[in-house]
Amino acid sequence: MSPQGLDGIITAAMKPIKLSTIQHHFSELISDRIGDDREISGFAAADGYQPGDLVFCDDKKLIAGLNGSGGPAAVVTSKELARTISNDDVSVLLSEDVKLAQALIRQRYDDLDLHDSEWPRVHPSAIVHQSVFIPNSVTIGPGVVIGRDVKLGEDVVVQANSVIEEGAIIGNNSIIHAQVFIGRRCTIGNRVRLKPGCVIGADGFGFARDQDKRFHRIPQKGIVVIEDDVVISANSTIDRATYKETRISRGTKIDALCHVAHNVFLDEDCVLVAQSGIAGSTKLGKRVLASGQTGIIDHITIGDDVVLVHRCGIAEDLLEPGMYAGGPAQSFREYTRNISAFKKLAQLRLRVLQLEKELQTLKSKAEALAGD
Image 1: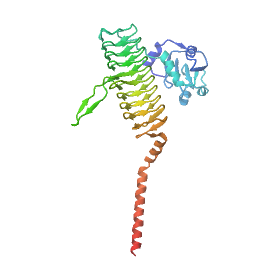
Image 2: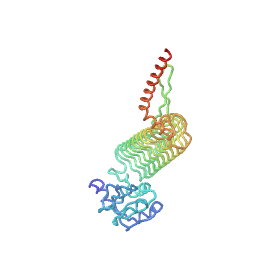
Image 3: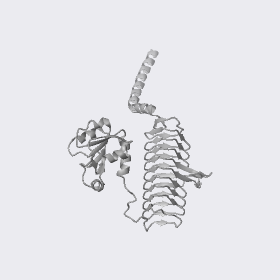
Image 4: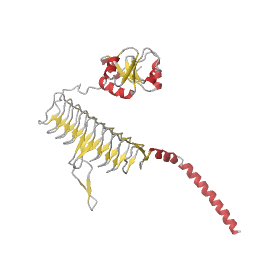
C-alpha cells in the first residue's frame, strides 16, 4: 500500500524476523500470538504498509482497514481490537501497551545504526587533543573538535561539526548528533541523546546592574550534569551553573527549542515540550510534564507528578500533584470554568449594556414621578 521509496528500500534490506522470535525477546510485552508464526520483513504505519510488514495499531478505525486483501503480515494490537480482525492472512501479537511495544521492539530491530557511517571511524578532518583516548568502539565524524582531557565512553558517536570542550565526560552509548556544543567540564551520562544544534553548558544569563543601569557579567563557572537515558532534542539549550551545577536527572526528555537556565534542577523522568522555558534556580520534582510553551520563573519549586498544560505560566510554587493550566497557573478544573466564562464575555457585555439602558430608563421615570 505504501509507495516505493526510502521505506521500501529499508524494508527490502531488513533481515526477516519470525514472530515467535519477537514474542520470545519481548515476553513481558507480548502476551500471546494469534495466527501463523510468520516472518516479517519490515515495520510500517497502519495506514501505509506492505504485505510483509509488521504494524502497531491501537486505533479501531485503522484496524478495520486490515480486513481487506493485501494486508500486512502481522499486527501488534490489544486483545479487544484483535477480535475485530477477520483477515486470516494477518497474524496478531497481543500487547496491553501497543505504544510501548512499538518503542522497544523497533529499538531492537528497526533503529538506525549510527556507527554505520559513510566516513572513516575517526574522520581525518576531526581535531582531537592528544590527551584524549579514543576507544575502538567510538565513531567521530567530519569537523568534530574535542578538547583537552575529554573522556569518551564506549560506543559513543560524535557526529559532524560537534564541539566538546576540555574536561567534559561523555558516557557509554551516548549519541552526540551534528553541531552539538558541550561546554568545558560538563558531564554527559550513559545512553544520552543530544540532537542537532543542542547547546550544553553555555554561560548562564547572569548580570549585575550598577547605579547607572549598566550591566556587568557575572562569571559562570559551574557545570551541567546530564544523567543517564536523557534525550535533549534539536536546538535546545541547557545553561551551566553560576557556581555548582545545573542538573538534568535520569530519564528526562526535552523537546526541541526548550531552554533550561543556570542552577536549575530537573528530577527524574520529567518531560519538557517544545518552546518551554525554565528560569534560573528553579527545581522540578519527579515526573513533571510541561506541554508546549510552558514558562516558569526563577527560584520556583514544583512538586512530583505535576502536569502543566495550555501555555502554563508559573509564578509561585506548585507542590501538590495535579494538572494546572493557563497563566497565572490554575487547577485545570478552575481553568476550564474560566475559559468557558471568557467565551461568553461579549454576550455578557451586551447584556450589561442592555441592563444599564433599562436601569437608566427606570431612573428617568422615577425622577419624573418625583418631580410631579
